[in-house]
Length: 170
Image 1 (cartoon, rainbow, N blue to C red):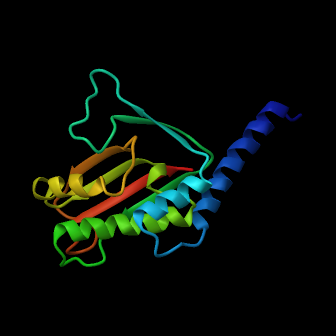
Image 2: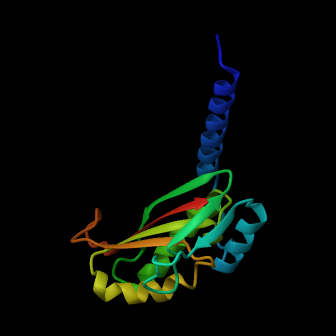
Image 3: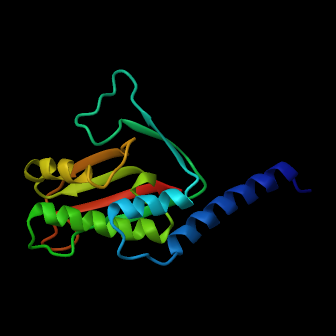
């Protein structure tokens, strides 16, 4: 005997996962500025993000929120991205990394306005974190996503000094 509520719940979860995977499989839209990508994502998105700023959980810097309450239909997981030119100055490398993240977001119909968390990995954390904090504000929108920055002795690609991954809700 089949439990109708359980079947409906399973269908709901399957539908959610199918939509999330379909969003990840879409084709990329190239050549949009961060502002144009933001507008493109806002037109398609039904997601809602609310910044969470409870007492006792302060932000160490502006540009991120202690937490994000996200409501939407699909999740987009962006694998760690790095710069195109490993020999460029760090500001350029960080911008190239955010540009690559934008390509993946656009492929799902999302933008930086849908990002709910960023995780950034640095080989030279203390040197590069101030530059990262400056650049990310050119791409991200309020409420800024939750964020974690990690220092590590090395990354998977020789010469790579920064890698950023993201999760978005569409």
